[in-house]
Amino acid sequence: MKARIKITLKTGVLDPQGKAIQHALTGLGFAGINDVRQGKYIEVDLADTAEPAAREKVDRICKDLLANTVIENYSYELVP
Image (cartoon, rainbow, N blue to C red; front, side, top):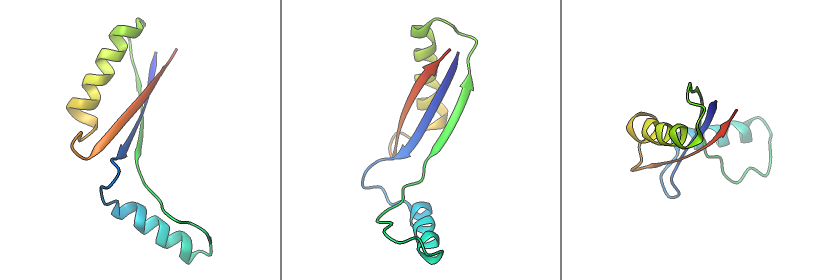
């Protein structure tokens, strides 16, 4: 089973990398870009096949290591 994890900054948290990307896009001639927010995408291959155990493990992984829950949100989906 795989966990597809997305980590994004919470609303209201300054995103300097997103602003740099937005500035670069404007410089390349892409018009109409109002805002860019940058995040992380991580795939974890789990040995667990039982969904409740996999969800518990992924929550712990996100909270303990991958996401700074003070400034970041995380979401994930489990796929076979």
